[in-house]
View 1 (cartoon, rainbow, N blue to C red):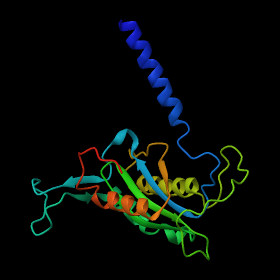
View 2 (view 1 turned 90 degrees about the vertical axis):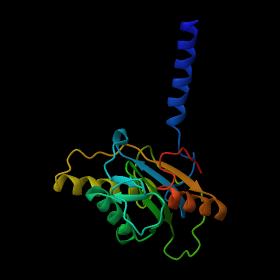
View 3 (view 1 turned 30 degrees about the vertical axis):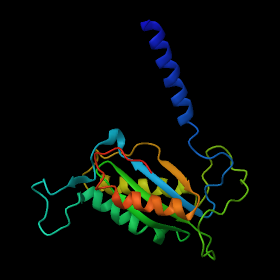
View 4 (view 1 turned 120 degrees about the vertical axis):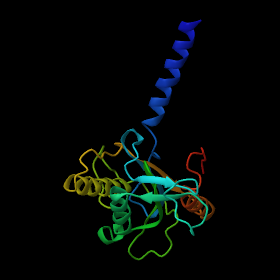
Length: 199
């Protein structure tokens, strides 16, 4: 019986690992104009960015609302500054909403054409992108460069232990209702800290 359970567990684990390899939409051009929900984690989910404070914590400030809040440390503040400056480095990218949490970052990333005013999902044919060849202005390149900038800053400022999880999670936002749900999820993330809530 134990061997059967172990075998079933291994089959499930292999299936899960195989599924994780294909988390992105096939035949979709991730440099296309559209809105993307992005999540980046720290390696091993270490709390590198600060802490969640609440009315129960000694560090909670009197006079603020009674919801949980994120208290950023130096690394968290740098992550926030880099997100606020992102569109200065990528003129066709904009961060609509974001939250820096103790061990992860959520953001709505909008990619737009220079002349486009409406950025919600414009699907176009897949460009013949070769395996792992970076596409300028794509979600992957923007996130890679954002992470690299945070790493550089950490290395120069005595936070050599800081590390990102190697990958990131992205989800294409398909319509305005989903956009509103994601935006609300990001805003409520500190209040929901410690609860398992999905959008």
